[in-house]
Amino acid sequence: MRPQNASNLGSAARVVKNFGLRRLSIVEPGVFPDEDSGRLAVGADDVLASIQRFGTLAEAVAEYPVVVTTSSLRGRSRARFLELGELPGFLAEAGAGTRVAFVFGPERSGLTEDELERASASLRLPTAPDFPTMNLSHAVAVVLAVAIAFAPGESGTERVGDALASAGEVEAAVDHWDQALEAIDFYDTGHRGRSLRDWRRLIAARPLTRQEVAMMRGVANRILVTLRRRARGAKGESPSS
Image (tube, rainbow, N blue to C red):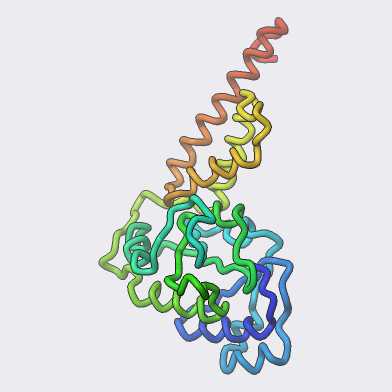
């Protein structure tokens, strides 16, 4: 998210390739690769050259069923917190073969509250309290080392016939519920933004299956349809009009 030092792009690209991965994305605004980036990539020029850029975090992680943010500071988010040692169990819980997006914040400020709330879980790196912020590429290396070394293999949990919903599908469900909550005047207290963040956190607190997301959207849709029918009835219109 919004990297501030171009040199970190090269270092991060090298780390990504070190662990057998190929996809590295940047959420705008962010710096572009430069001469220092190329020098630090050292053999990972292909990863550096194929960096994908997105306008928002929602767009960047839309196709991933599991989104893990990283933070050195506990308490900035009410999302499910994981210690680094808990990451392997969390990945096993998600199931073997499940695609996971790891999200890293800007070097100086870290992720915002809204960005942290969009995660399935927030991973806390065990840094010293008096010096908590890691270099971006170092944080990437630590997380990928644990994730790859202990990722569930063929013997891990399989979700046959129970496919997980992507972050994009979950976000669509949040938008659908936002419409339903607006229709029933849930936001009459004037705290729509905060309420919606809490609702998003509740939904994203664990990986959801597509069937579960469909059920949630079905309820939201029923609320909207029922209210429209009642409004028509109050106006004396026929239900089919």
